[in-house]
Image (cartoon, rainbow, N blue to C red; front, side, top):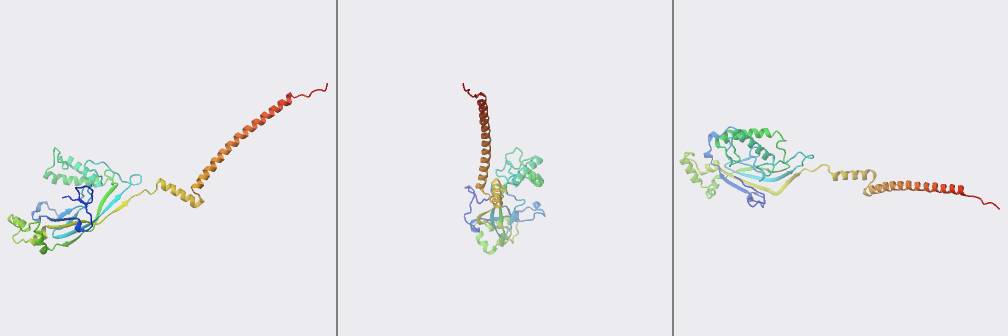
Amino acid sequence: LYYALGSTNTSIKNQTASGNANGLRLILNIEQYKYYPALYTPGQPDAGLRYSLHYYKDPPNLIAESYYAAPGFHTYVPMTLKREKRLKKPWGDCEELSLKRYQFYSRYACLNELSAKYASESCNCSYQDNEAPNPCDGVQFLSCIIPTAGYYRTQLSQNLSVCPIACETFSFATEISQSSIASQAFNSAIDSFINVSGLISDAQSKYWLPQSYTNVDFIRDNIVYLDIYYRKLDMTQILQLEDTGFSKVLSEIGGQMGFFIGASVLTVCEIVQYLFEKCFTSNLKSGTKKNTTNVVASDNHIFALERTTGFTPRDD
């Protein structure tokens, strides 16, 4: 059973208003009278519907993020979508790997894919690919695949380098409440879509139910009434941002200079202009002094030459 809310895909339903009257409503017959005693263990004695709320691109995590709806009760599941965006290295520790079976990366999808791969290799059959040459049968799935995949998933989850934390995750925050179904009043309404009397008669003919079993008993033991809906049509976002970026470093430098020495962008430009003019003027003065000295030397030389070649005429 799969039902999706909140996507633009035409095959996925959208909730346009909040409240339980506008969400997903399920009224199911869990057929508790067909439960097989050999499959029950002391660790899982539950009767009812097990479900998971997850992002539609992410596989459901029925191991750690599942809920139960009990028969004979009306279960209300209001939910709120939460999005978390993390940074990659060196600011954060998230990473996104390429997966074969899933387009959207999540840590659970990575663990699910790797544990399935190792379990299929250990059990010599494949349970994720229906077109594989050696698909697993029911016995192999129950006796080998489930415990082996669980073992590998536990071991792999302890190493973040194998399946790192995803950079973008979606989750649903819920607050579950329940109320008992009014069996007497609901008995006549449920017959319009579930033939309770016919189901009881068929089960009694196969000795699954006693002859004294009534419609009220059937609703109490087998009918699950579940409403899943958005509490509000909004989304909570948690964004991880860089603590110090290039623009922030420049802002910090400018702010400190302005606070302590009263400097600004114009002051920096004036300092650069002053240094440039100082260096240019110094070079210009050095060149001028050199040329003046040569001229003076040249003048002295001419003057000396003139004094050497000069003569005083005689009075004849």
